[in-house]
Image (cartoon, rainbow, N blue to C red; front, top):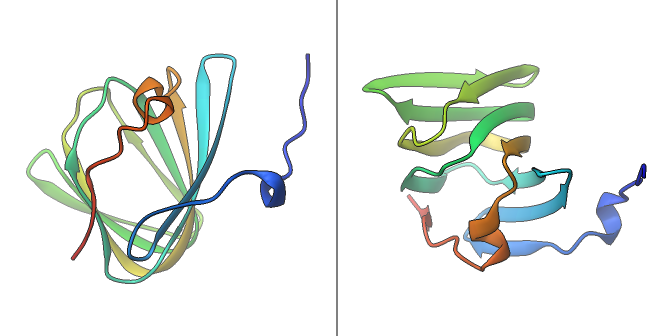
Length: 117
């Protein structure tokens, strides 16, 4: 059954300095909305989920596969399952991430890789 989501009614979590996350699950997929402050870091981690990151505003530096990728507003990045990656926020940013399958680790309260640069 179709379901509309109002982001202003979805619980916000401050995961670390400059990292605010909201997320919803449906149909085996997680959609997350991040608000990130320049200089915030999502530490090196990996997960079983395929990830699509869509940057709405700002810019992020991804470090993965021995390379660095800058992803800015209007761009997206595809990350394969189990690919270790780290993110540094280069400019204040708003980002949507899609995860397939659903983030069972988040549902269980396991998000310990968020940190400050």
